[in-house]
Amino acid sequence: MAGQTDPHISLFSPQEIEFMAEDELVEILPNMKMDPLNFISGDFGRFVPMMATKVPLWLAVALKRRGKCTFRPPSWLSVDNLTQILEAERESPSTFQALPFSYVEIARLLFDHARDDIPDMYMVRSLVEDIRDVRLHKLETNLGSFQGTSAVKISNVSAMEVNLVRPFVRRALEAFYKHDKPEADVDRDARSSSRQPREANNEPRRPLRQR
Amino acid sequence: MAKYFDIDDILIEEEYVPVVFHKAANGVTIDPSAETNCVEQGSKVEVPFWLAQELHSRQAVSINLPACFNQKTRLEVQADAACVDLRSRCPYFYEFGCKLEPLVTDRTLGILLSTAFKIRYKETLTKVYTAAHITASKYLSFLTKEETNLYEAAHLSMAAFKKWRTGGPRFQRASILGRKRKDSSN
Image (cartoon, rainbow over the protein chains, first blue to last red):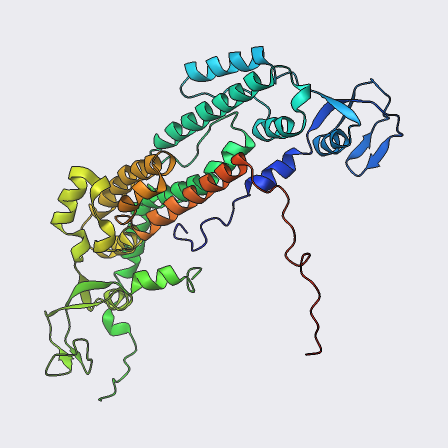
């Protein structure tokens, strides 16, 4: 129902989205020697100095904080690639460029914790922010073109962007669906015709008590 | 039945609709100021929607359109739907209209609702993502209940995202941690 009392019932908080993004694998260069770590999600390591290995982002951040490793920034997080993406985003008004599903969160975590490992950090950061703003604006313009479609396809939208518009879109689509159901007319005619033969006299009469 | 306990649904059905009685009804006090406690055939009264619906299904009354869907509103919606103060007319404009639609003879009601919603939806969208919350507050007072929910949903998620982006405390201390144990003897 569109008029739900709790408007944010199906919303993840941005912190939760960030938490989920921490499971993404990143490459690190350890500077210590350690046996493999065995987790439920898999085994990571073994850690040998200057031998690149892939670990979940949360583990990488924890190691980085203790000064046990350096990050290898993912290949998409380079000035060249980001400039290209930004241009492509600006050129096409309705399609989104392919970026990792949780690029906003990964970029943010890397900027927070691995400032010294990213070449041209300031450039990269402003590029990522530009891309995010352009995409958000594009997403909003796309939402404005809804005309009561019951299915919407927008590909390559990232986790944070989806989450940002989720409550709004859900409600809006519900309302659209309610207002222009094409079968509503048929349904209504069927209902009213079934109601017609029901005569008022058939109702069992209950004497009204005089007050 | 799924909406049986929904407070909004209950409030929608409390809205008054004008009805015309086809049958005389005895022993009812629908209008408290009436001299007799009976309703004559052909009399026009305003009753809550839930009552009108039941009476209509027994073909005792026919339902007319309430004032919030009158010609004046329609013209205003046609002129510029985004600026019509729908809340003061009926806070449950759309839901009420949807409930009324199968019961009244007017077939244009559904079109009115969907066009009004489509235009106002776009306006809400632009207001949410571009305008500041303070400047939008004047616009907010025009919105119906459903549109307000829509606006609030988008606004809350936007605010949460902005808060996350600008940082702030990354780790929250559980409220129970900093507290000292209280002496429970006194």
